[in-house]
Image (cartoon, rainbow, N blue to C red):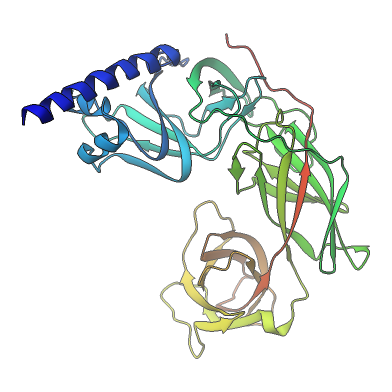
Length: 423
């Protein structure tokens, strides 16, 4: 028992010394920024990994936090754990006052360029209810430190004010590879498709047609312009299904903000994205068909009611298509999806290289309904439809079809540094 207590004391002492070194090196721990309404945000801790914990204010929690990770986990509580799918950096803040409606944090590299978006956030339960954690799976990884800036949105649409910044220690500094960018335009071929990356522009504002500098880093995006050809001719039958961006330091971002079309160009808006100071980005873009599907890709669910209490009569609610089980799972509204009616489907097992499209919706009077936006998760899909007046039921035809992928290694041109000095 004495030996165990002595060993624990030594561990705590060594960990305490290490913590002091960390605190002296991470200069912004304990710093505070203040919003215009008096709300304050104080950075208390930065953690790294896939499971993040804030140890709390009690004596026992503070003692555990001084132990090496392998020992601290044995005593750690399973409550208030912020988890991410990939290793991430989590910022733990103590907030007094109003909680923001959206992320107001911007991660800046040594050049001052800021990237925002795509985070996991959690507020702790009592007695630490003033604490909140913000985890990001991307950050500037080449430098020893990087900067976290805080912006306050103002009433004027799209404007924001920089109210302060924190300097934080990079948990993964190192000598990373340097990718060599290829000049644009670049063309890649997949089967009978030819995809050309015409332009890649960082620092633009939102809106697929916008090539003007963003008003602030919270709105800054990167615009990628593609031209898609089939058998040598520009086609609009194929559209952007996904865009992944990555860099040589290990940042990998699997989402894009939105898509659009401008004459013969397919446009993707990326937010977040890697930092333009990187020598090169790798873009992996997926393109899926929009129309003219073959019979082996199609399934029609007949007599789908437009009112929830009714049932689908005389029709199968599932089928086998393209080696997967496809199910119609009913009417259920999906937050953020427009349209009058939302129809939900499930694909099992998950087919990452396939896309589900609502090809047609015809009502019980033979009229074609307007197909609107859609949402797609790993296995679940939802489609919005605006039916004609008087319609009671719809025949829904969906297509499960394969996505084709191309890759490009290039560097964006920069039209906005978006780096502003703090007040």
